[in-house]
Image (cartoon, rainbow, N blue to C red; front, side, top):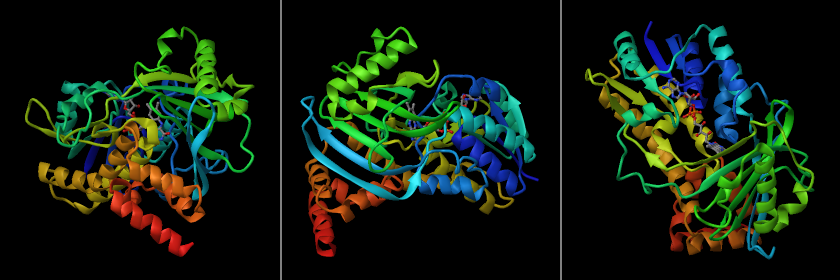
Amino acid sequence: MRKITIIGAGQGGLQLGIGLLAKGFDVSLVSNRTAAQIAEGRVMSSQSMYDMAVGYERELDLAFWDDTCPPISGVHFRAGGSDGVTLIDWRSPMRAPGQSVDQRIKMPAWMAEFERRGGRLVIADAGIPELERYAAESDLVVVSTGKGEIGALFERDAERSQFDAPLRTISLTYVHGMKPRADFSALNISVNPGIGEYVNFPALTHTGACDIINLECIPGGPMDRWNEVDSPAAHLRLAVELIREFFPWEAERCEALRLTDDLGTLVGRITPTVRKVVGRLPSGAAVMGMADVLVLNDPITGQGSNNASKCAALYMDAIVRHGDRPFNEAWMQKSFETYWDYAKWVTRFTNTHLLPPPPQVLKVFAACGQNPALAAYVANAFDDPKSLSPWYYDADEADRFIESFAVAA
Ligand SMILES: Cc1cc2nc3c(=O)[nH]c(=O)nc-3n(C[C@H](O)[C@H](O)[C@H](O)COP(=O)(O)OP(=O)(O)OC[C@H]3O[C@@H](n4cnc5c(N)ncnc54)[C@H](O)[C@@H]3O)c2cc1C
């Protein structure tokens, strides 16, 4: 039986580990936190996931929250100023709903499920000596430690990394009491150009259905005030104040908010980075990176957990198809390129939203307000950002694209 060791009990590592167990592999999974520590810890993400990514969980009988997690049924996109005037405003249901299950619920449940299905869960903070040992004992070591420091083992890919500093200060607030939308539950995206973005959607947390407020604040700008916050209550107050000031069209929904729990807040910054797939240990042994270790994006477009699920599905397929052959560097490279062929579009989509929008994107968004079929197409692209190319990135293609919808309408 081939032995695989995976480092990191997140979306990528757990999904891959559980998937490989079903295919008859001997799988060990190393986590630097126990299930209880994750469950009782701080929120880590807003983890909105769409149909394709949740579909891979369903294939492994891991979508335990389909009946309890409130659906994210569509997308509502607005761009406007602090005066409350929105110049872009379009909305559409999505083909299939998305969902956001607090990782503090999902990961502990999956850790238990991993063990129940025969996996070996090791609680350890894996450093270089541990990786050397796992590499000597295993046919393959996969490093899925997200933003963990050990990811630095993988060289930054300068050609594929567009930025070398964070473009947003990110704040999360998990709340109860948000007034529901009148039409459908949605991934609500509001942009105040040059200042930041407010994204919110329903989710499931320890205390039941909730809403998650994501504020993306341009560093040094008027929303980047999180260093003033000294308590969970102050965090919530600032979130509401920023929504009132910069996204007034959403303020009415936020009049009676309360935190889900004192650990339902997070502030941080991410430097979007692409890394090379092979990590070289001092002994010369090679380990393979996955998901956020290799393709780390700002959460502005809510794609990281989706990426991790898709990466896990692709890696599982590549590992199974490789049969008894050695998991050498050439295979790692080839497997990653298959993933990058998809993930590069997610990175491009996300990085595009971190910069002032190109004219063709504004044009398409304006047209979405007039054309429900076009709006539906763009809403569904959150499930598959690859479907936005080439027109999202090319003015002529965008014109042709809009025209094709006009003919069909
Ligand atoms: C504020 C914020 C909002 C987000 N919102 C969304 C969203 O709406 N939609 C979306 O799709 N994505 C979102 N993301 C991104 C998403 O959470 C990540 O992309 C996803 O969790 C990555 O999965 P992963 O398996 O690569 O890593 P992770 O989920 O980070 O898991 C890595 C695991 O490895 C463990 N670990 C780290 N180092 C070690 C070590 N040395 N030894 C052992 N274990 C270790 C960690 O404790 C962790 O449990 C958001 C991220 C942030 C920060």
